[in-house]
Length: 226
Ligand SMILES: C[S@@+](CC[C@H](N)C(=O)[O-])C[C@H]1O[C@@H](n2cnc3c(N)ncnc32)[C@H](O)[C@@H]1O
Image (cartoon, rainbow, N blue to C red; front, side, top):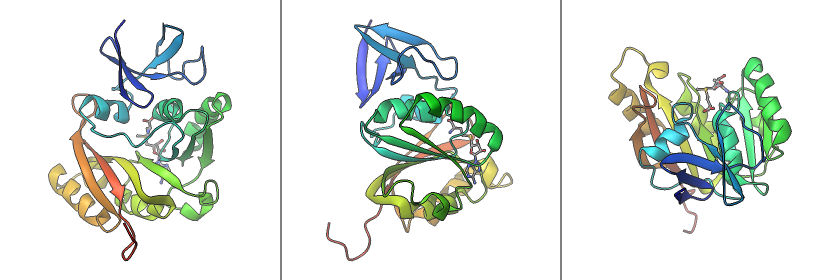
């Protein structure tokens, strides 16, 4: 089998994306486990995960690394969050904020076997409610289909370290179904530019339609030494 390392903890196994399984023998959403030279990998389905599709579509830098503290907004049942948990490993943390109780019930089962995943049943607009969980995050990952998605990302910037990465899946139809997606994306970028620099934007087709994936970096406070 050909194993190519793409990023910290992210591999291509004979052309299929995978992460190194943190919890040996357990799959999370029915994904296949593959053993190679004593290492167990979980195949990462780009049709089920926007982060996987962004990597396949050419994401150039992944700020999520071994030991990273990640604030995950819109964790749902933990499909992508579990792969992020694989990448950050035992030394890292994935704080999983999810508003829906039904998704949270499933997410809790995933968190039970993954001690680096911290479930938070909360609206990601209420930053103060989970601000004390982790002092400062290295990365924010946001996949929330909400009209005020840009505002939610901006308020959560308070928990991100300066120079920290943010990855966001922007769903144009949830923000404004009547406007052209390019206009919606442009306005989104304009409304977050006070806090974030845009590093890269990517379409997610053919895996997910009507989304733009963006890699961002939190700006330094003005007057701060670089
Ligand atoms: C597209 S799904 C996320 C899928 C997930 N990121 C994955 O790849 O496995 C969006 C999730 O965001 C949650 N959500 C929507 N608005 C939210 C909010 N204000 N705060 C927290 N979660 C929210 C929804 O309940 C839903 O589970």
